[in-house]
Length: 368
Image (cartoon, rainbow, N blue to C red; front, top):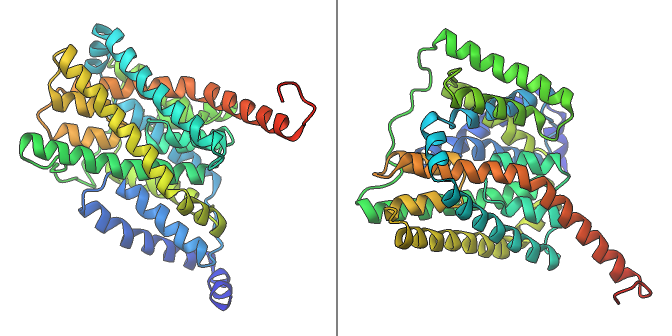
């Protein structure tokens, strides 16, 4: 108890310095190990440890909103004219593959919810095969326990990254994680950078005023995808800006972890691992079908159907001899459909679970 009191009584500035130092110490080894999302996972892990040690910090609203808007711009930057052309040319194929993955993940989520291992909406968002960070933000907006969703999503990020990297290594004889060195402080092009800041600021404000769940992220993402996809604007996000956004979002999640939440997350680890493995294997099965029926190159098919986020799959695909536009097109279509379908599925599951609980508690209710 004394340790908790000492940590909580430190000046807030000192606590922030300690959290920042811990975040760097954890992030750097993960980044050198080539782990996708290392610069988000490091701050989140540091914040969890800091909170469990008795820290007393919370992320201010403005940096948190700015970070969400930045992530919206990041996703928008991934939508290129090449991806739009690829989707337009083969949309029935993409739609079928994407719907199959989404349906399979939702069925798994329903099973986990029915087993009462996790709340229904938490299970659905936690097992959704979209961008991990975006699923966490959407889960928070729709009332799920975003801490458990983060645990589930980032466990799969690690599993997918390891599996995809091993497949890439076996297929081409080189690691899928051998990527070019990052230039952390590149020269800023004033025009694109100002356009990006304006997109984030205006889109974030409109999203906040619209009261749309996760609107601070969604409005810049949708508007930016349309503008950037048709070459109307150029989005420039220097790595140092993304690092700041990842850090604030990681801290936001980590500082809200408690001992009971962490204990529950660890208790669900075997089931979460099994569910994520099932989704990965299902994606591999779809890749095999693509290879056999549509004559898609195997590594391209595997990465396209891999249930990871846009960022981690893009890192591996960009350093492998694959059809990058095809891979990113399927990933982008799946991400978009999950954003559209996710809220409805979440509400459906929540309503069904609530109705089931009412029926279970009322022996006189019809159907018993």
